[in-house]
Image (cartoon, rainbow, N blue to C red; front, top):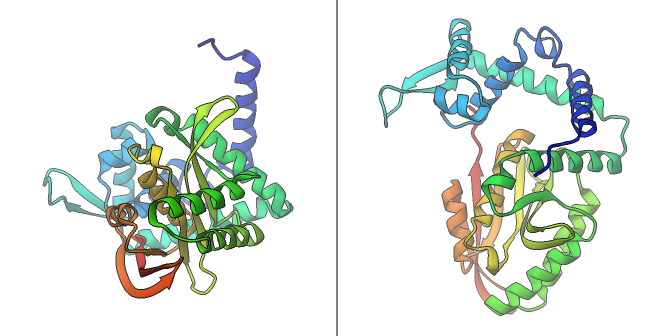
Length: 316
């Protein structure tokens, strides 16, 4: 592979300088707090993870273990964290935020949300959408997805919704004998998504593979705001093509929903499905969802058992 041109390198460096200044990472205290940028990021990772160890935090942030240990010692001194011995390995400590740590994180998280909201306040919905899509593309290209998996995830583009509706209708008819009402449901969900799309707290992800202009659709999922319940998101229209079901696409899509929901500040994710969808159920169970309700119903020309599942997100 040929080396990057100096123009490309300079363009990326220029963007880095612009963005670090725009979000205030050069300030002495991040968001005018008493924390450095590294400390603020470490606090976020502790708040978002479910009982991480120091080594896990270092690995996630790609930081030297000694440096992370020093940061954690500072948190200890300020009473921001608690440690307890791991049940699996007593030599390791499980780290969580103390009450003071949760208070510090909540204030920092609120300030960060307000800062970004102010940064994009003058942009209309279409420009906000393009901004989010461009950032997702950068994350996908430079992140681990392109090297660790034989496919990549991206956010939706014009034309995706028609294909999503089509594949839901065709696959559910072929595999379960469902009638055209499945197509109606998928069309209604995708239309509502586009009409009410809020890029700050909603997403559609597409899994695909290929190169150049030849891309193969492998699956999709939506995470949307539950407008009837506070801090609640809905997972909708999870689909994986038969050709991709050995690649872990479904689990990746569901995990992506969980990560984004935590970052967006949701307290829980709910979903509606049917008991005959055994593969999807196994994915939900592995992700930590619990079955909260079942009900017999007739839909799509079949007698089915509807299921409501719920995932409580960590608020530590």
